[in-house]
Image 1: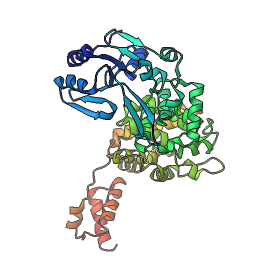
Image 2: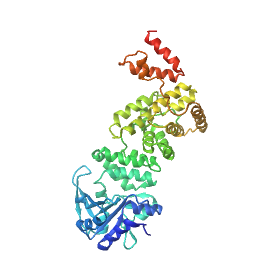
Image 3: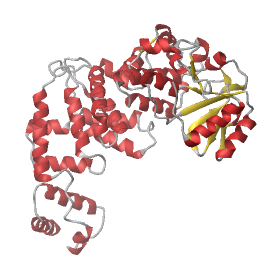
Image 4: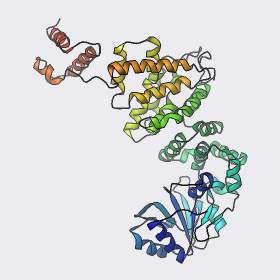
Length: 452
């Protein structure tokens, strides 16, 4: 096999190879074996027989070198930002957080020993750049063929609890199973509370990868089985639904079906990651309002409440929070409007609620995933939804109405800017959505001004 490096990439690797031994490690080798091609977006190079100063000197000929992890022996080159250049190292945990590790850099470390710190056998391959050879000390090729994710070393694996979440997202991305012993070790780590020491940023990163995978439910089911799912998703397991509408059973069963459907259409949406989070959390409010009969009135409103309580701090990006909360709130609206054959006013109100947050097409996709994410599929309802939306869009468009009454008009009419100003504008806009024209709204405003 040969990796295709050209231009500057090849010059840098050839220069390093003349002085020391260099190996491509990690995901790039795994992906080549899996798919027989890679996109070279993330290249890890491990360099042997050279001190960090020697590596620095070679790389400096080709750009500016940044020692992002000097104590870890890791260097970056500004002209090859997708490359990491690292010395071989051994790691041992010295505390509870991911930053508390003792690192020993050793330029002549035994190759098999150097691979021992890696998480899974399928991530422990080394590609000998000079000799065009793959080194596989832990039988990773066999595990790839069998579709098995297996830890390399029980002791080193337990030193980083993030590996539990990495296992889940690898399962979902590659549609693989966890080795029995590896799963048992993960379960013990969860029971010991090891996940409590992970930062929300690291947890979020792994969940993002899981949700953008081929088959998200595989990883989510694994986390459920070992008790590692983020709160309050675990409450969905014990929340019943009406079996005539949801023969798949509890809310979690429904959610798992929905996220897999969402994964199939997410690339059609304006923001795939936000869309997937919305699919995962769309029914998060059901446990708060579900009746003994399995009905869940107002679960969209309670869903926003649960999001604010448990997930608002989870996301730093305000726009993704707005997207998810809005999708939770409106995820049922279209289907309800179809069922009730709602008039134009309801459609305009919906457009106003989502305007500037996500396009109507995103909500249509979510509505379909929600409707089909059950074992009582009724495909005819999807056709009815499409026909309803197509008719509304053809007549009314897919964007909220632009207000025909603004603050200047109110002032010209003699209204004084005060606390009631916004309420007046909202009232006028509501009249507009109810199909009142400009003259009609002006007349009603004058009547209100005169106390009529």
